[in-house]
View 1 (tube, rainbow, N blue to C red):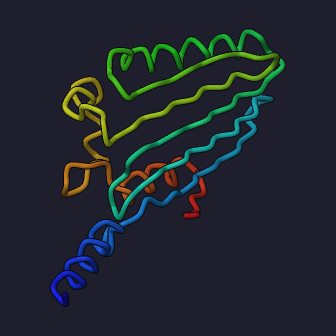
View 2: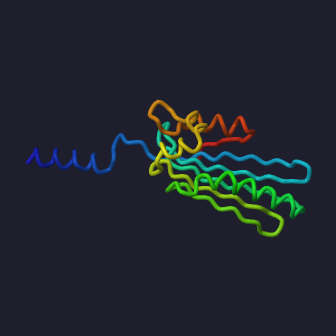
View 3: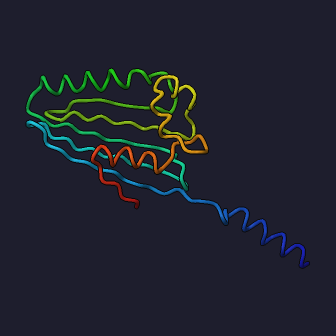
Length: 152
């Protein structure tokens, strides 16, 4: 009977994930106003330990100039179009009124990292010793760009 109880407790611990890391979130934000162009940038980073699992971004550019919005849209679409054929790398760019909104959703737990690196080798600087996107590395990039990052 003792063996059954011990086995039951061991299975319960195993099933509940005792000792495993849980997913956490960090949010990095930045706002700027440059020559009448307002920028509101938000980066949500989901991670476990030091490994980034997913990054979801929302970048908003607001201006009264339709021409400026169209230029931003073209630039963003040109950058993201390189990733069109990579599964688990999704983006959307749209203009609504005087605001361009660009969103991305990158699932690093499912993405083919070799395929991603073949398109943009600069992503290699984000890799940690586990060949995963490192939390410290991505945090440094956002903070260097002027964002403030807070873990939730």
